[in-house]
Length: 487
Picture 1: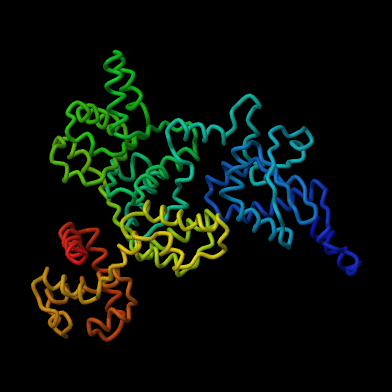
Picture 2 (picture 1 turned 60 degrees about the vertical axis):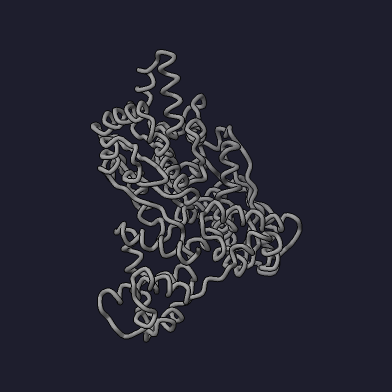
């Protein structure tokens, strides 16, 4: 590359007089080459759809005294560069020039003729069609407008969805539907308690589709919105327009479907909308707080439709997932919180992700107030009674007793060398709960139950976790045992 050749030549000829700290790069070719290398690294770090949407019209404007000025086409793109991609851009650009750099983002919506002729934008797109006409709305603006009209949060993507044992199947199904709508799993029915990530997952589907095509025919609504629109349309005599709005789309996402359970008219309309879309392989995603079988007032024919595709659940996140979520949020919000504090919070707050984020925001506020490092002592002080309430310690023996009572065996039997099917399964459940509820080390779990090594515990945890997803009876038993343990 020309820039590197010039720099190398200068260093060889005048090693004592070349100061890279004050190097000024003005050549259009050098700027283009540096940005090309940076883009190549960026492309490896983010999704293809995000790269195409946000980086295709970017350029390196100048490089002077360790500061790189990057030009984007509008304010929306600048916000994304500063909030979502800043660290990736800085790291990639520093790697490209061979030293740490500072970056600034500016808006340059009207490139001059010289810029266009020079191929100033990313060479990765040289073979694609030319820029849109000036009168057309840019790709990024179309995407943002689509998300705003649909009520979709652009930050809810598959890239920042933390995957764990509690949501792995739901994540895989949602991604498959986003990649191959109408054919992968149709319909897809996702259920789970509040605050576990259902909204993030279904909006990630929408964002995935809209990033590929901002004009994609998608409709996203809650059952309440569907009901209100239906009533308004009937009153105004526009029932046909209402039906066309939904049935002519390629993708339908309905949230909180449980609220239509006692509403016969809404169920009737959703049933016919479902049939109309399904026969043309149009994708349907339904979201609820419980499975179809637990909706006694849902019409049998509609329940049958919901159960005819893929039904997946999202459970309460296990310790590892909770901790990963906290770490990710700290990175996003630039919170400086000690790792042991995050582990402390992940152990004490187990109900849902929304609660975890609320706790983290309170802790992060300490940083805003000038505290450099946040400790467990700070956490206990700022969170007060809520932490104290959750610190009632569950002992390993509490779990063992509860498991034994549920399966009608004695603690002595569960710790023995007996390997009958009933006792072995009970022992595996105890191992699973000791691990997931108390986050005990594998070796400690093995020691408590008189096992030789931790490999037995690993096998038990994997087996019960799999059964929890596949067997309704096992999942119910686990929930009942946990209730018994926690009182």
